[in-house]
Length: 316
Image (cartoon, rainbow, N blue to C red; front, side, top):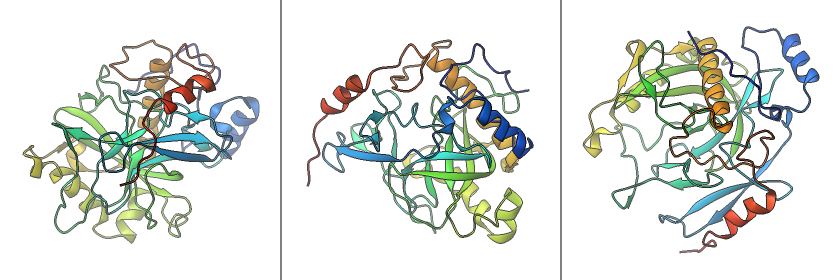
C-alpha cells in the first residue's frame, strides 16, 4: 500500500492530480475548483542562467521565470504541467548521448544544476558498449522526493534522498536545464546499493511518436530492444567505477503507467512533508519562492541574492 495523503494540505502546493484512471472531466473539475494550485501554471516558461566556469566544479545552472524571478527547479516548478492530460514537467539534467553527470544540487540554496563531483574530480559516466553516454534525455520530476525514511512496500528499500528520476525516450536531444512536458509510460524499480531509485519512462509530448506511445507495451512493440537496453545500461553503468552491478525490483520488469503515476504521487506527498518540515530533511535545501504555506519560502530578493553570491559566468 502507498502512504495516505498528508494533511493539512499546503495551500499553494499541488494537493492532488488524480490518477490516469480518473476521468478527464474529474481532472478538469479539480482544476476549476482550485485555480490557486501551482500545477495550473502550465503556460509558465523557464530560462536558465549559467554561473561559474563551464566544465568545472563551480559551474551552476540557475533557473528563473520569464519575468526574471529566480526559482528552484526542485521546489518551484510544478509537478503537473497539464491536468487534463496528466502531463508532467521534467527538468532535463543530462542530454542524450552525453557523459557528464549533471544533477539538481539538492543540498544547495535554489537547487541549481551542477556536475557531480567524486573524490574531487568531475564525474562522467562511462560508455556502456555499444552506447555513447546516457541513452535518453535524463532528468527529474520536480516537487517529488524519494524519502530515505520511507520503506517501499514492494521492494522493502528506502528512498535515495533525491527527486524521482525520469528518462525521456523521445528523439530530440535536449539541453541541461530545459523544462519539457512528458507523458508517463511506465517505471523501472532500480535498487542502487540498497536504496530505492525509481526510473520513470516517459516521452516528450512534442516528439513525433508521442501520440502513438501510450504504454510500456507500446514502447516494447514499436521500439524493439529499447527497454532491454535501458535495463542493461542501468545494471552496468557503475561497473567501470568499480561498483557492483545494480539490482532491480520485480525481476527487472517494467511496471505500467498506472503503477508509475502511483509512485509519482507517493513521492510528491513525501516532498510536501519535506516542505512543511513534517519529516527529517536529510540535508535537503528547501528554499523556495512559491510554496505559500511552506516555512521555508523566501522572497524574490533573497533568491536573487543567492544567485548573485555565486561566481559569474566565466568562459574557457
